[in-house]
Image 1 (tube, rainbow, N blue to C red):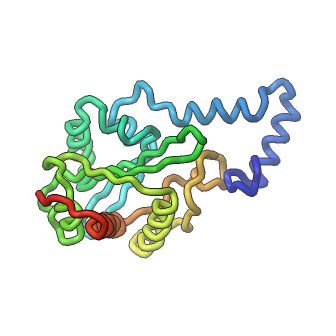
Image 2 (image 1 turned 90 degrees about the vertical axis):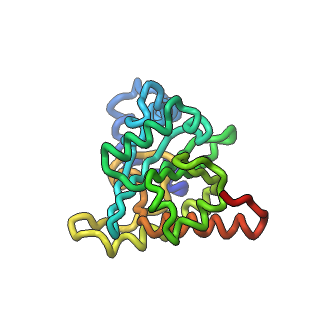
Length: 226
């Protein structure tokens, strides 16, 4: 409930204090927080489709439909799920998505959030567009496999902020929302950032991110071409 951390508002603090006064037998705040945090990140028993739809945004711009899903687990564990490629392909076909971006998040031993991205694109023609070609050509993954990248928290926050800004002009009036601050670790209550969902992303920003990563990789190491 420390307001300086940016996870809660004055409204949160007031409501918590009122609840504690009404229910003096409630467990300690930290115990309640830990239980809620575990429940939020518990994806056990969920199918791949349910995990993808648990916290998802859809972007449609310039004829391209992009699904952006927050996955609350380690990327490596997500990629080891049985029949993952078939599930991703079926998900895109069922919901008519051209690109699927999985943004995984988990907490390390120091309780610090670790974010990673995986991009799945079932359409070869779209993968070979000018914006994506330089990135996908620098990888050695088989066709149809999800492409992955490790990014720092600062990189993700910077790109998500920039992507959100570029998306707003393309939205219809009933879809417009004010830009969100960087996604906090928790808090789904009213007026908190996560209450409004994931930060906005545009297809162009995702493609540009792929291109930037490719250029950065090529400047530090020589990778084999497909």
